[in-house]
Length: 114
Image (cartoon, rainbow, N blue to C red; front, side, top):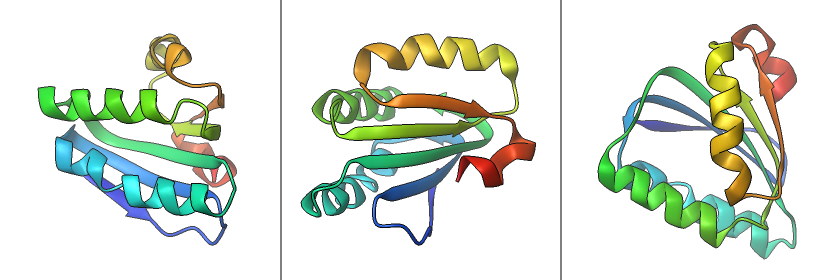
């Protein structure tokens, strides 16, 4: 599941991923991304994880398509993760799909991430 969190900035999108992300979870963020882009701004995404288990096949494919379509539309991505081992993996995984500045935060630093 991908829960969308309300943040009071024009170009910030915040989400928390739990369990396995499915296609419809990824599709929920499309309107938010386009709303930010329609304002002439770049997207800043605060992506939190809580008991995140990855993606279903359709969810992974949808996420890949979205990342490729918007690779130049992200300004910053703040990833709130608890496992430092996964930070390195996630960095390497995301680099080819975005020009955004990616920074990782421990769960204790989630306020700083936002």
